[in-house]
Image (tube, rainbow, N blue to C red; front, side, top):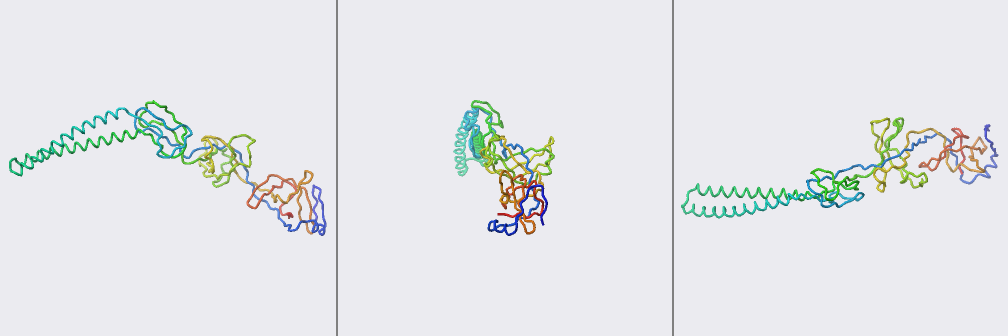
Length: 335
């Protein structure tokens, strides 16, 4: 059954079609499919964690071991802080330790002598108890001094500022020779990996879903960037709060390690879908600037002109949206 169309058609007899159609030709029934509506926005590279490396003691910064942009591992030394009072405290503790050690040695000798005299019955039991008490007091005082020394030695070790996590150094706000207090910031470290943060108008909030695939452009915002070099990512999180009329979403992307933290890049994110007619790209033939497809109409094959639209790449292969020329249910002859 032949239909009248706006565009010029060429009706072929069935015998002529069989003679001209390539071997292995197949049919495809035109149906409406969902085409994702893409929204181009700027995504900003963010680090999952921004961890401050802080000084554990007060003093002077005598050495800075990293610069902005350096990669560090958890536990690496970033800077060294020295408090000159710690050395004086160690000298005082050592002097107390030597004095108590000498007193303890003397008390030990007196205790041994008192034990011998008590065995011979020369002194009373109270005299022996006094010597034992004196020895115990000095022994405990010596232990307390050793514990105090261990605390001071640990404070000296804490002068080394360590990286709290692995990542990249973003900033070092201090310089060598700076006087700092305990807990003061020495460096900021971006760790835990990178992701893209998007901010879209709230009218698109209902169309953004977690797990959707997005297309991330290459580094740089130049329109001449190679589109084939773009990478894909997944919407990992959509924040439930809308702030200043905008909804925020995070996108997980492999290979963001080369980007700067805070760098912007173009991102195409699906915000919904629209129904459209699609045909396989292989069914379209272009001649003299016009696009044609072959469809079956009863026992005949008709070549009609179409107006193609957007090209869509699917798991089944490349498809092309048909803006005009076909209706749902048409049977397209594939080569």
